[in-house]
Amino acid sequence: MKIMKKLTLLFVVTLGLLVGCKTDSTTSTSTEMPVAALMSDNTLSDITLNDTTINSSYYEFGYEFNVTKNGKITQLGTHIPDASTVRVTVWDLSDTSVIAQASISALAHTAKYVTLATPVSLIVGKKYAVTILSNDWYYRHRPGFIDYVYPITKGNITFTKYGYSSASSLDPAIYPISFNNADINGIGDFTFETVN
Image 1 (cartoon, rainbow, N blue to C red):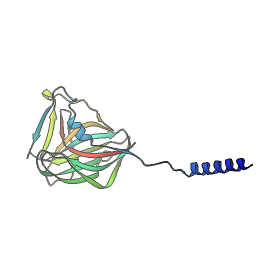
Image 2: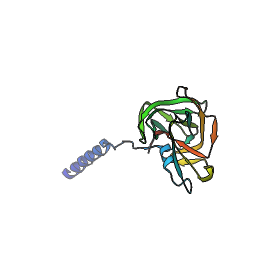
Image 3: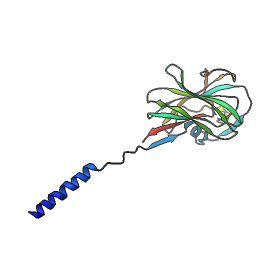
Image 4: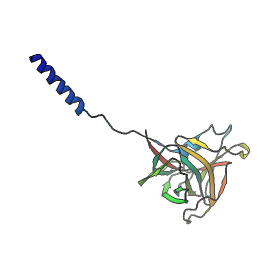
């Protein structure tokens, strides 16, 4: 009978420990900077020509995209060839409204990202765009200016087209009205965070 009480006590203690144990429920996240990945991808053409434009006319230019996984934008960023202050804008294309924007003072040839006070959620099935207002930029084109074939997917972001509009440094955000597939210009970028 003593053995039975000890076994019962051992069973109750073991059961209590099992029920009381908590699993580690920390959530891991992944981050990506999709426009930087697009600009650095050397597999997009047989021969890639990398050039820079400095102190040109101002343009608002960038990429339409959608996400393949729900997530959020936590930072906006840029990488330009000349020290300058640029404006990076994220658009909701259902009504071309601005959903995030930042002015970023960047150094030449140095990526700089600023954290948004409030992250912006992006969901599968919606269309978005990221643009930059600048008179300095990097650009890439294929030999003979042969079009890139969109869509182009980088991580959880699918780029669907490139567009631009002539602008001035004082203009409010202007959604691009001209589109072409011959160039990949930028960089106005963002940090996209997803839950694994």
